Length: 502
Image (cartoon, rainbow, N blue to C red; front, side, top):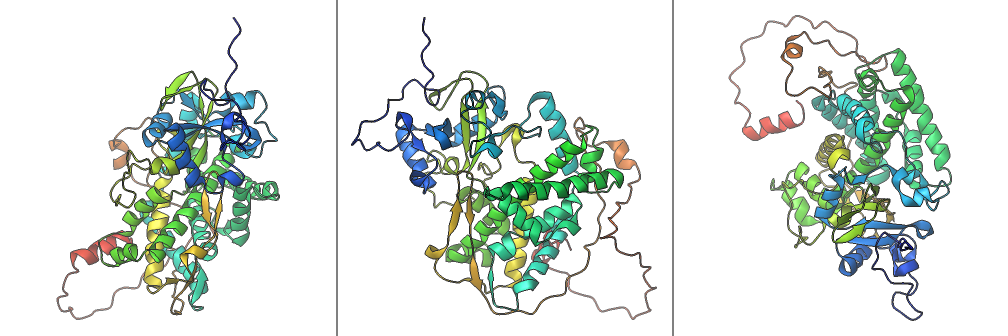
């Protein structure tokens, strides 16, 4: 028996090319929409057209007319990312990679090519690599990180507060995440404008992206070697010392993964939250009136404008069904974050508040859910609040319609966010936030609290030479009269003091 030919995206119900004059003429093979080029200038509108035409899972074409599925439904996306027995992130399973149509010369090769990192691995390899990353993440002291975020915000605002005008994308949103991430990775001295520019260039996929990638990797490789020789109580040091025994190359590659993914997502999140605060008077009024907190505003933004609109990709390990479609073994699928977040079945009214609801797809889900999402949230929470406290009268300069975006299949990045405000004098910023004890690294097999570890004396964290503060013996307190009773702070003041880490 002659086997049936494999259909463009793994289905058997797609028509041949439409005849000339048909409304679908100009599409790709099989009458499929392309996720690139003129047709995809407004991906949001295209996704809704695909939803009306195909339902929760739609066949589309990538560059070079490579067929793939885009998952548009919220429930279907969650099922895909949460079912590793059927769907994998190992692109070596993809038929398009096997037959060469999505080979090294493909424009999306940097996103497609398999790498020995936790986000592409599965099974035992995934447990080993993901366990090391999560173990290192568990040592991060979020109270100390919030102080670093606040300090970095003050430094950035000091650079433009006297001018009365600023671009909150290039001067703030693109810098704050990098400053904080360099601190977390234990390389604060590496943070500068060149590293920010190289990272942005690498993510854009420009002609100089390869050179920018080499620049970033050289920094991470040198930092890995330095931390191997001089262990430190930072993410890199704990990643190196994890029982999984990562090689230097594995450490550097995972530092690159954390740096790039967390940076791009958080930079977009910061810009999106600030944009909504500036253009929507109801949004800002609710913040000022205490009806919405900054963290709630961040979660609303993660629903409406997720930092990554789509992720390529997942790959079928066997014949299966998803959203009423037959998915063949070797088919590729796109995690549709933005269209999944506005699925009419979960959000019939897009104007309704989603406060307190974290079931959005912004950070993925399942075994490959973003491990650093709480850090991204903290950078956005503290950064936006600290900026609005320094510049309470900040306003958008120009009209909302004048804002420009740089869009791709994976994200929508705000190009600039010009604002004006009453000029403010710079504020003094402490040199180094106070050090807080670093929690012990959680082992992959550890469940609950290890009583023996909890009762053992805790080793004080060491600081890099470039950031360590000199030990100063405090002078003996002078004798002073007993002060008059002070009225205790109210509940709201105590909450704000706790939230800001005071």
